Length: 168
Image 1 (tube, rainbow, N blue to C red):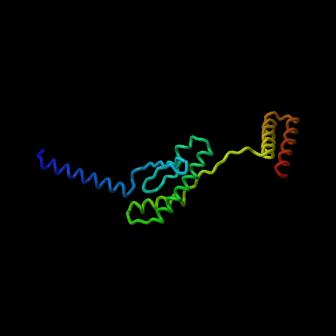
Image 2 (image 1 turned 45 degrees about the horizontal axis):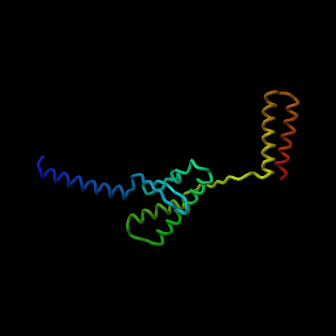
Image 3 (image 1 turned 90 degrees about the vertical axis):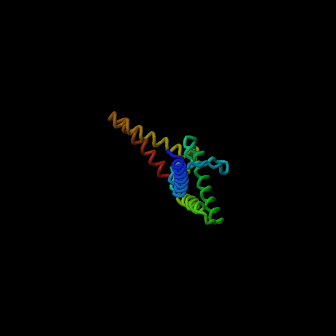
């Protein structure tokens, strides 16, 4: 290969790589991953085509306790809203600013965080749950055995459950 062809080939390769990179960035075709420390929470998410993929938000905390994951997703929603507000209040004409603003504002409007908390049931809830379990177990036993005594116990347990349920 002659030297001019090598230089020309190198030039074309360099230009096409630069153009390809710029177009890929503008279109957002490649999956991008982000990890942001926000108010004590490690919020991770991915986006592609300038749209945040909801199923990837706080994906690394899904294996944690339910309340910790819930806190992360709530923090993510707040972060999307705060970022949207910041980008709206500080406008720029650069294409990337506009894409980011649209992406975060869209996520702020559409993302639904996981809201969960674990608490101890009240005495009434525990009593109601126990009565329901007793009724269910005796219903199964009565069906399996067909014994009149078991059917009588089932009726009594289910009536107690219905009374508890209907009279708070």
